[in-house]
Image 1 (tube, rainbow, N blue to C red):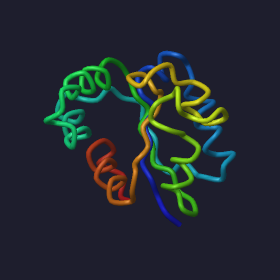
Image 2: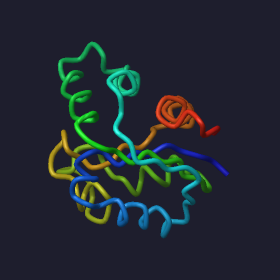
Image 3: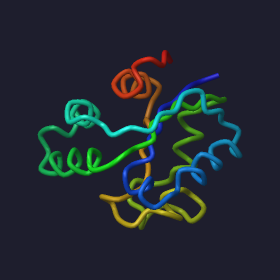
Image 4: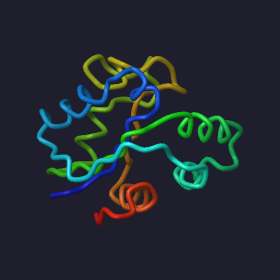
Length: 136
């Protein structure tokens, strides 16, 4: 079994999509093993997006992800990283396939409803940053 990190972003929370998004992961066969409802601190957000620190959109990413509550979670299942990312869809909602979370709910690149770790290493790092009491 593999574990991954996903986070429903402030736009998904504001639009009341939490239940549907979690249900999609569960219907796929993934199990929620940790979950929280919180607002990220500036420090957590900056660590989360650290790989984009020198890019012009870094401040916008940090401002958006700290603009309201998020729902970070750890999911478990066979090939959890790949399974979650397939269900989430392409980063740009306009390029995401219908039936994916972003394809169905994303409005634009800056409001794409959900984040999903891109590797087991990223999942560990992101979990440690945002859900530090959860050991994956």
